[in-house]
View (cartoon, helix red, strand yellow):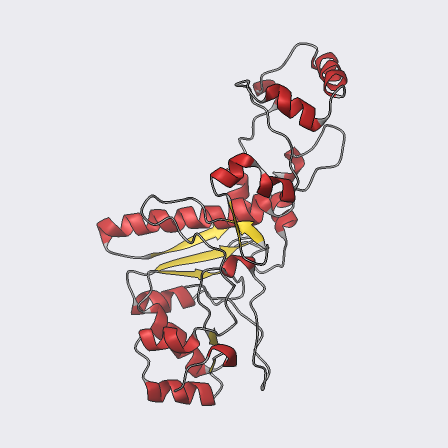
Length: 297
């Protein structure tokens, strides 16, 4: 379960799509957390959950304590940019801000040139999502011994810094006359195109790979054979789930992303909300069920 705010749908709207690519294969429940009944409803859902992900810096510090009081085995993962304490904990930020303050950004790029921002791969995905997932896996494993849940503080500054080795130039292996070597390599590589060099290295067991554009990567033989990407009937392509598991490898087809509130009725019903209570929550505007996917109450 992930606690994530979405814009409250306007009355009379019938279709509200989630634009988040990462929502593929998930279910969407729309709850108004500004209403006490909405808060109580989410609290009830969390009482039956294994993991809750909270990706907001403005959620009260007492929230995990309340949810853990309801469900002592709950794993509560807090995924933020700057962490839960310190002068920047409540400040807004982007991927580049987190790796800048962690010291990682200064290590990217060539000497005497400006740093090269690695878009949002290093902090958001590696330092954020990946390390948060690792923390959840560790907490779930620990729970098998203790029987108790805990709170995970996954923040992108801490986690991004953790992924750099921090070696100085003196500690790194050096080539003799590296500048001359680099210039010679440059001259040689400029004698052929990228694709020509790919053919040269094709049957050699050497560390070589062409830098592919996204559309080229989707068509690459290795990526096609290993099903790195999934494509739907309309030709839309996205990365397949990773890592792959032997018995439960994840989805093998590219499904449509859920409408906001598409599964409100079904998920709440599965979690013990009665038909009468569900009708009340819908009429009161505490929850929203997308009209294009609503069942007959």
